[in-house]
Each structure stands twice: as structure tokens, then as C-alpha cells.
Length: 375
Image (cartoon, rainbow, N blue to C red):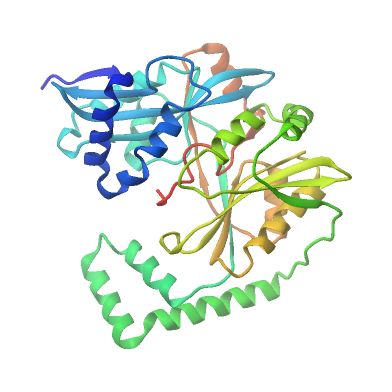
């Protein structure tokens, strides 16, 4: 079976949409056309005619793809063309033929840096096998707020969907013995006890925190004042932030800035999830001077109050030590460490990325980590 690997161009658009519908099924409605156009054609950080997509073709049939979401990455004092690896998928009947490594190698050779945070186990295995290197882990924190019987039912359904027997036992236990009611009560009692033991008052700072529709020139002032405290960070200038958090379809982000005497100190991007996300609150992106502990605590406290009791939990992910300290102070619990992977074929970039003392800034707003429905 001779399968060809090549970079897609704009004339392949409709064929690619058909492939996405075949490969992703019902989930494809959240990928094409709106999100696809935003990500791969209306991305202001693309600078070539071809699409940032490599495809595997068996004759005239697309059987696999891997894509890149291009972003401006600052390393030290220079910007580079980087791409997050997204939407890597191969049709089931073509798996195990070596197409995954070929697609990843082809995509990885295009941008200055090709990297990923959240990925399937199979994708992580392939990337490591072809030489992708680990970056500092992103730590995920969660603050539990409340549970409910419907959240318990959905959670059990998702966790046990690969185990039909356990799923049936659980269904019987919930239907006839109200197990989900007892679990919900026990979880809420545990949250109450934990919060009593780890009681923390919200600091009273002088920040004026207000909602914005668009990121304006004040964001660039903040960026220029603070960007050199990180060695490796996706640019948080207004062009990028508006593309990522204003123009992105399907995800209703709420954006807030913190001011003191009309001087911008930081911003935070928030999103409330629905039932399919277990009513989780997401702190997607938070940025300020890293040693400005007051602003960090103020923005996080604001986020907690903004979500209130309308969510089951609040999640935040970060590589920044000062953010981690503030999250723990406000009652967040460390849940997991996620290891990003990167590849570059440029030796001077590889040297900078492998520097163990380099300060990385990664958050849930990076990559395509935040999606609906959730990955």
C-alpha cells in the first residue's frame, strides 16, 4: 500500500472537511467549518499560501492528517515561528502502517518550533520515538466547589464507558439504591470540611477589575513591561490575544483586566463549562508581572468569586512558580503534571529550549487544550 505524505493547500479544503467529518464523527461539527477557518486560514501568524496541514493520501483518499496552529513564540529576546501540534488523526484501517511518524516528521520540519502539551497517549509515544524533547511540566490545579447527582451520573458514565459490566452495575446501583445521591452528599461534605480546615480569606486589594470586549494597546504596554521575565513564552500582545480569545468560535471567553490608578497590572481569561464538562470553571489565561503577588492573588480571587457556586470546580494550569504558590494559598489542589514535548531542527533554538534554567510560561490558553467538547 503506497500512501503519500504531502502538505495540503487551499484547494484541498473541502476534501479535508470531508475527512474531518469521517474521522471525528459527531465531534466534527465543533471542528469544521468555523473553528477550522479560524485556526488554519484566518490565523494572522501564517505567512505562506499552503495550509499548515500535512495529509496522508492513498490514491485520491485522505486517510490521515496532522495540523499546526501557528503562534508567535518569544525565546530570549527574539520571536520565532512556532506551531502547536493539533488534530492529529489517522483512519483506523490505516493505523499501524507507520503513517503517524511520517506525518509528525513532515509537520515538525516546517515551523521553527513544533510543540504540544495535551495529546493522546499514541501521539505522545510517536513524538518521543521520533525525537521530540520534554519541556518543563505544566501543573494542573483544581479548587472543588460543589457536586450534584447529575454531575456524578455524567462523570461515572464517562469514566466507565469502556467497561460495560461496571457501567451496568453502576446504573443499577444508582437507579435502585440512589448511589449517586450518597456520593454527591459525601463529596460536598468533604469539600466543606476541607475548606473549613484550609480556610483562607480573600485579600482586599485596590485593583479595579473590569470586563473588556477587546484587548487594546494597554495590553501591549503590559507585555513590553513584563515579557523579559520569561525566556520562553507565546506572545501576549493584543493581536495574538484578540485572535485567540475574541475571534475563536464556539468558546465564550470572558476577559478582564486589573487596573490601579488607570495603570494596567494584568488580565485574566475565564470560561464556564456546561454539563458535558461537569460544570467546570476554567481559568484559561492569567498574566501579570510575575513578582506582583498582589495582582496574582487579586485576579485569582476575582475569578473564584466570579465563578461563585455556579461551577463544580475551578481549574487552572501553569508553569509559573509564583502562580502555583498563589493557587495553593487560595485552596487549589495540585492534580497532575503534564509534560509538553517540542521539536526543532535548528541547533541554536534547541540549545535555548534545552536550557534547564530557562523560564517557561505555559497555561491552559496555550495549545488547543481548551476545546468544546473537552478533549
